[in-house]
Image 1: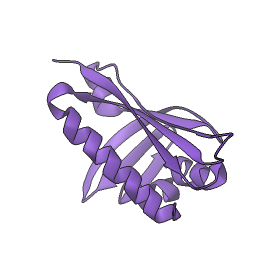
Image 2 (image 1 turned 135 degrees about the vertical axis):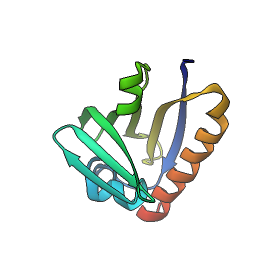
Image 3 (image 1 turned 90 degrees about the vertical axis):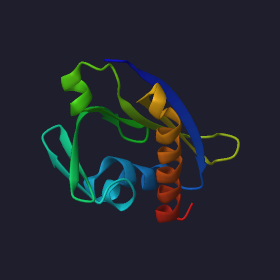
Image 4 (image 1 turned 90 degrees about the horizontal axis):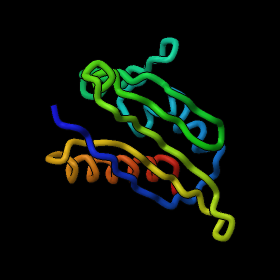
Length: 129
């Protein structure tokens, strides 16, 4: 099996860390922009899109800083990857810088990056940023 390649994207958001904490770290927040529904049991998050489910293990999170997941399918396949969404306030502009780190197979890279751009645009729309 081929490896997934790491990529990073940055976005400026006109919002507060408090709003992002809710949107990134709670099932109800994640279901407003990332998935149709999100359920959590222990450290396993179940993301539901159009009736299909994907599970991810919460690796770590820190309020006002980041949340980090590993997709269960990647874990079972022995693929070294994760999804991390990190954010911080730019001291100059006071805007929040959201830094996304994820992984994709080389032949899916462009599609996955476009998916994330679209998904972050949905986050912007939901929070009015």
